[in-house]
Amino acid sequence: RNEALLQMQEQRESNARSYPRRLPLAIKRAEGIYITDMDGKQYIDCLAGAGTLALGHNHDVVREAIENVLQSYLPLHTLDLTTPVKEAFIDELFTSLPQSFSEKAKIQFCGPTGGDAIEAALKLVKTATGNRSILSFQGGYHGSTHGTLSISGTLGPKKNIHALVPDAHFLPYPYEYRCPFGVGKEGHRISSTYIENLLDDPESGIVTPAGVIVEVVQGEGGSVPAPIEWLKELRRITKERNIPLIIDEVQTGIGRTGKMFAFEHAGIEPDVLVLSKAVGGSLPLSVVLYDRQLDKWEPGAHIGTFRGNQMAMAAGQATLRYVKENQLPQHVHEMGAYVTEQLKSIQKQVLSIGDVRGRGLMIGIEIINPAKQPNQHGSYPAYSELAKKIQQECFKRGLILEVGGRFGTVIRLLPPLIITKAQIDEVLDRFYEAITNAEI
Ligand code: PMP
Image (cartoon, rainbow, N blue to C red; front, top):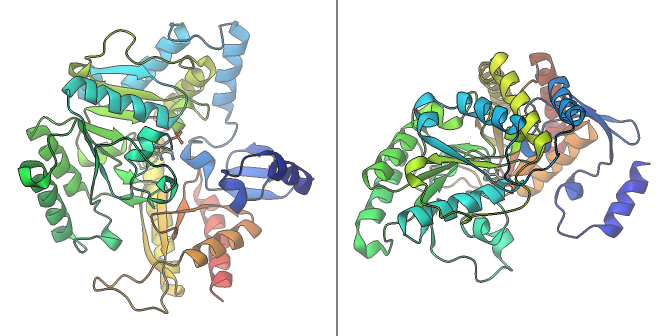
């Protein structure tokens, strides 16, 4: 029965699909960290809706929140109009933010996707500053619309889409394992000095941008955490020059990295914060939160239809409350440390893991080709074929995980935040068996 649905999908759905190619799965049911396919096979889901399912599948508090909306006969969709559910969601979100940011922030509801909110953030800073260009980072990912693709550092999806939005410039991200400036503290320092120089030297061709957009941990770029010192420097550089800093927490937000928001690790604050994925408690919702000084919008300057999904707001509020009441960020921090340590010990037992990294439960395992020569920094060539094979071997063993990264070589673990230590051990057992089989 799996096969029948997969065949129907193959015939009827667009060729642009990505996940089903690598994960041939027709889903019957899902609960917690588990997915059951149509043939009754159970999988551990370490993809979790691309990081969306903070509380896993069908968590009671999320289901209850959705059911309450249905019981109440509120309109399910309300454009930009307000309801008690909407105001309660805003309250919950604002009390989840660091106080100094929430005191100065305004919220803008966007279309349902992360990309919609990034588009709004770009228009917001352009409107507020009157400037045109956006600085973003190599390896960054912000969506697949024209605007968000233009500022994403991934070349593959751009190659047939000419005439992207102009005036995007890419800065080097401190990707420590493959850092263009070398590994370690010196590398980050050179990277931030380089950025400062680009902004200050008129011959760099970069005039004051409308904003700088960054992921605190690059997600699709391969679970690459930016060093704390570098983030502090980026905040200093942008603040001193009055350049709005947009932090894209579409993937890192709501506890994923071991803090409610990943920027909190660096003790910095954004001027503009973009949230989606987990903020809607697994239903589609996205928002931009920004310093109210940037609110230079004219009424109606950024409109759209689907900005009032009451079930997503209720599910989002329930998720935020659960994450706080159960100190999930602390749990994520502990589980993240545990899984990273265990993966580092697996790294010693196999040949093809070049790097294990992450923050909280946003883990990257970089697959290398040890048969080839390392470069001058000691990192081995990327090995995307093997990464895909490991993903397939995991899938066979009932473990769903993602392969991504700039070179297609990073195995990414993004389990629901509620995963337990015993469940992590199960993930690690399956992963170890898969990688040892794939290496043969
Ligand atoms: N920003 C980041 C950091 C993301 O990870 C993603 C999605 N993976 C997006 C933006 C775009 O979100 P969406 O796919 O919902 O448009």
